[in-house]
Length: 327
Ligand SMILES: Nc1nc2c(c(=O)[nH]1)N[C@H]1C(S)=C(S)[C@@H](COP(=O)(O)O)O[C@H]1N2
Ligand SMILES: [Mo]
Image (cartoon, rainbow, N blue to C red):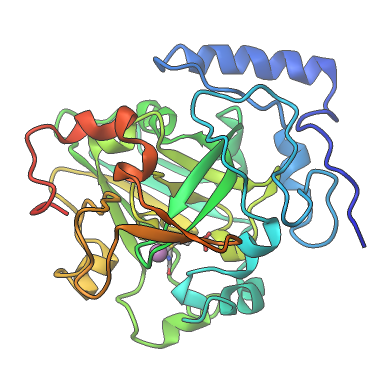
């Protein structure tokens, strides 16, 4: 059955809450140079939306979600991957190695209640419930390309907020140079952790300037609804110019550090997976070419773009670096 056409995001909220959200947005927007398209989606609305079943905000499979808002400076105009594909073709080894397994198995993950720790080289460490953390920031929608190191890609409308807002709030010390992230470790909720395929918990990291870049976001939702478990509920990192494995899922801890933190795929195979993992069509994976990619839902391969098409925004972060050596 054909689903009801999605309504514009935020259409259900009252003018009063819209007013309050706008004020919040203006406050936080002052921290950034670029202006982002804030989506007035009420957090209450989002967090109570069930992860299964119908949603009026859900896109029609195979069609770009119809979002009645002006395209923001960070949005690609490429057609979004269908919700169906984005939620059934996943990499989330805590729930199995096959692409279909996370969607089948991730119901054992309990994304609420959920505590996130932000610590390390910060003046104001936090131990905070995910709903409180979410309430600190207005949600924005960003339609980003996502390029997996395995040479497939998607286009996903994320809902979240810039990581920079959270980092500024905890006030990094003068020693902070990197940000480390960790996924939940609980084999009862994440049955794949019973097997030593990777070092658990999954960990990732960014250099502080990468973490503060306005493109870098923490997502709590996608396609106008709360993040499905298989996509990394309740909180996942999105760094669109890097290979997908940098986008760590189901985050419980964010630690600012002086030294470059260990990262899971680099620990597993340093020759194949670097710390930076910037999308680079000129540096092949030892076992396959990175020059082109398969966009999920499309027939023909397409060329892979330097920094996944975000070179204009991020290339300057790497001035003076040899990106063949620091891949
Ligand atoms: N904790 C955790 N995070 C993870 C992974 C994982 O196995 N475990 N897989 C990564 C990889 S390789 C990719 S491509 C993306 C996939 O995100 P998606 O399933 O939402 O498309 O998640 C990344 N984050
Ligand atoms: Mo990936």
